[in-house]
Length: 468
Image 1 (cartoon, helix red, strand yellow):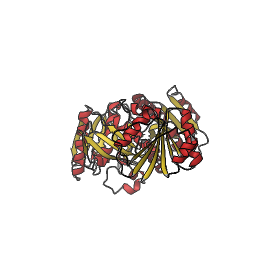
Image 2 (cartoon, one colour; image 1 turned 180 degrees about the vertical axis):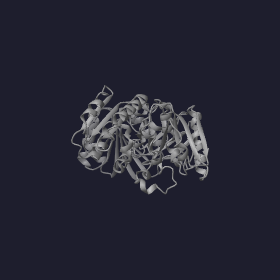
Image 3 (cartoon, helix red, strand yellow; image 1 turned 180 degrees about the horizontal axis):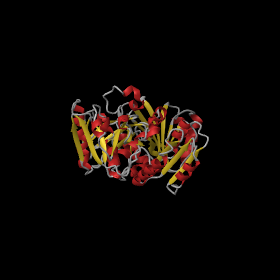
Image 4 (cartoon, helix red, strand yellow; image 1 turned 45 degrees about the vertical axis):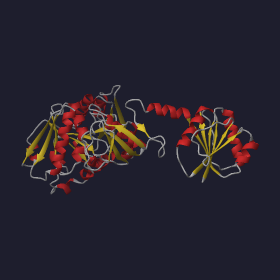
């Protein structure tokens, strides 16, 4: 039997004892110390021993502490009584674990004294009832938000998505509550509106997942970040077209209505730099790196510091093998601007493939298309395996209903890349996976439309990470 000492007075202590009595455990025996003894109905005399004395008396408390307690719980209403009781316990038992209910922001550096802030607990519990605030488990695990429940709203980008295609890195959907019943998740399970998801994972990651589930259209580049970033390496870009590139990038900034950071490295043309600086205002900042040392580290630092959600680069920049590797490792969407006019783009084009990555980025595709006023066209190459594609098409039709945005599914017996080369005024959207970072020569004999993205190099493209 494990002996536990409870030192209590006041209403909270009284309520705690009642709850302890109602919580059955054959392994514990409780010794309860109160200044004035009370009678508790239902208290099993074999499990509860009651004492009436003042715990601030070292002499009286020392007699009781001759027994081997594994833990002491203190719930008292007077700060001096709490401090003196802890002092008495430490005089007798140096290492005994002490749990203290604190209402006074009590400070105690003893590693074996755990202070439970009652004000913090009450505030956290009230916070759970506010709308659009994640509910986290307070008394399970570390209690830091690694267990969270999220209600999926009707307009969520997670609605009608299969769990198997949701990238779950450092987090998991461990349970679904639907119509007040537990539904165990599996790869083929589809999330429905008003499902309550139980999530487990890294607390920081879960906060991002919560925002992703709750967001509706018009939030891009969230949840990847909140600002835009133009990256210009003057050793790589075509200086003859750089002014036109910046002009089209700024057009994108105006459509998305977020802050814009323009980063110039390896500066070698003063006149072009001055023309770029003309765009500067309260929401457009220009940063010129004259040293151009440790460019990769500096790039990642900017992404984190400025909370970047979309990186905009020229065709030459994305074509560069090392630059493409760096962009992939940043895990944010990348807009590659070609030489064609950007303002005339009308259609967002997606080429379906045998994998399900297109479903993973579906909500971002709808969000971008809504903000940029693009039509959505899905190209289905009918000569390839269709099962996975049909599920993706079903998912896109479901999202089109939710977001009231029409989509067009185009079936082609001929390779869609050849068809699209005859088309103008479109932008291609595709998942940004590791296979796109390989050198282009290795994809020449491939039939994977994603690996052949460079066949549409003359057109604007957006590369979207498959994980949040």
